[in-house]
Image (cartoon, rainbow, N blue to C red; front, side):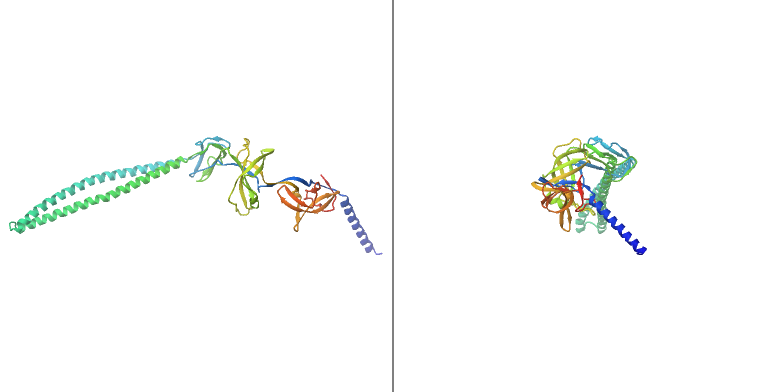
Length: 408
């Protein structure tokens, strides 16, 4: 036998020994698994929101800056209780005070121009009225003399030269009367100037009111009684119109806002009970009711479509405040007598549903027919029996049918 053949035989024997050792190890190895019994009884079907809910209140005021100016003072801190009208933030008033002073000066100048125009109009009206009255009287007198002389001239008692003189005088007084009438009409144009001056005064008054309002907006006040939940600005910071400077809430009438997936919308109805837990109050579960379901579905990109719902607490909790997190389960149905297992124990592959059970210390695969399910439990209609132990720790790499296991 050649040395090369001997070496090959040794390598084959060694490999078989390793395989045998691994098989022996696997045959004797026992994996610890988490299990849960197949139970029969009342099964509560719930809908769980897509993310943690938030404690909110209907009475929330998001206070925003009306103007753009630097912050000079933040008069409150988060957690402060304030009354309506309390000062929250002060903004720098310097530029707005200067603007108000300029607007008031412009208003005073416009009023002075209006007063001068009214006085000039009054004087001009008096002068033109007197001139028109005088011109009318002069024309009437000359016209009366002309009419008398014309009758005499027809009888040959007045010379032609005298009549020409009267005609010239009548024409002169008629022209003077016409000029007086034109001058009187010109006063109407001055009245338009008065109207324009009045409009300028009104415009300047509006500018003063706007400047006064802007100056008033440098002092930002709370619109409601409540608690300061947020005060995000700091002294020296430049705020722009619309910048939030505080959020004030009333702590009464609290509710939990949660988002449910659109696929669960048909199962959720007003008045359904809900179970609520808070990180603030560990180990305690509180009752609530679905009080509002939004008519709109969110369509944010890169996110699943969700529907906001509101849950009212059955009784007020003094420990709660807006902004706290809350875990919510909405009870959508109660099945009185069914066989069920934890939902996490049910697996699916190639349209087949199955569970792993512990059968005489070995993992066994059991195809099952399921019914209704929730996040916590799934109804089993066939495939396993009450009391059998289904495996729930399905993330173990070595877990497969035939492997020896023992419950933890």
